[in-house]
Image 1 (cartoon, rainbow, N blue to C red):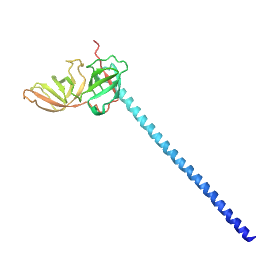
Image 2 (tube, rainbow, N blue to C red):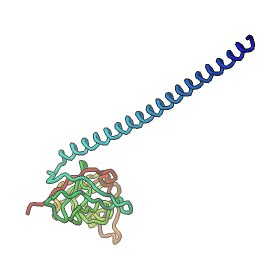
Image 3 (cartoon, rainbow, N blue to C red):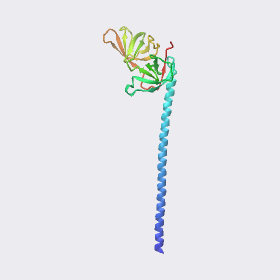
Image 4 (cartoon, rainbow, N blue to C red):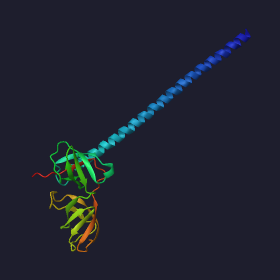
Length: 215
């Protein structure tokens, strides 16, 4: 009888231990599930934060475009940036805009490019490409091309820090900000002077404004 009771206690203890083990395994599994849930919840919260930040940036950019110096005929979204030509061209989503080749494209700072092609998308050659634009600095005319202003009279009063604007001599309206003079030096033939220019930043463009001519 004593041996029987001892055997029963032994088996009962094993069963209880087994049940406790099952309970602990269940609790551990629940804890792991909870951790996974919290991780997913954290990832979702962070994704929402990033989305909110992007929307805020878009709103700020759109609001800034409503205050450009020249009236914007259209505000367009940048659709694609060519990874191999990132700093020279962008494609805008064309929502049926009545725009023309040669129309200026701006952000809130100033000129960022000129329309090169109009189709399903609008191709814009940026100021960092090889476009040519007639500009005005301190009452002196010149031609902006490849990051420099050339054909400047050697007697012109131009110095570092001077602001550069479109001249209005071409299809682009007068007075659009282009950039700031960073260096003045003699031209290659020593007949005049030329100037290097710090352009409007074109590396972060989500929305731009287009000013189109009304012929």
